[in-house]
Length: 299
Image (tube, rainbow, N blue to C red):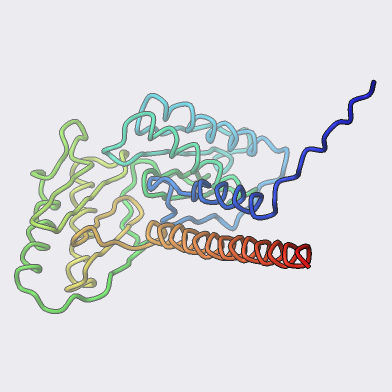
């Protein structure tokens, strides 16, 4: 005897929407590591030919950056070329002085991947992220002091506040002296704070202590004169940088990333609200339809 199989009822539409609502509410919003935030980058106009020995050297130096960053926060390399002095390749990487090897390696690997895209077939390229710096070129720059201004940014003015200015000056004075040097960094990485004002400075590792001091003095002086009573300021020279911020307020893509995350969260919240509204409407209409059907059946 055949037994009639009961048809499994499909879930009502509002249940499917509820499941979608639950799924959307648990979706993570994308975020980005602060150390991988873009600061600046640039490429030389001179190009090399694909498949040339110089391309082999570029691939070798970028690979050396990634491998070495797993064990060290700074290193430099020279790869001799077969076509004379201009075919020799020089390169270095450096991580921010407070990063450990794991964070340094991740930052350098990210910088190398970006640089390979940004400066494709370029004989030279440089990229500064929040947490690390990588550079290669066919002109030797190792051990040479360079105070060229690469980036200068100042935050909005906060009005004249003598206490705030005094705190800022105290931080910049501290960064300009070896008192702010972090132990083990050889005076190349310095941090300081006064009240709610924080500061950080760093030189590239191929500079001597005297060259580092000269470079940082120039960067810090530019912060004083150019940024005035701003809530934050950044000055990046070719071989060093100095930064300060008040109350953790700062600029650039780090805040842009946070803003993007906030916009994504707002969009998801709106979408979830709309779906919830539609679900309630379907439930209400379904209820009305059942009332109508029961009314007709009673006649």
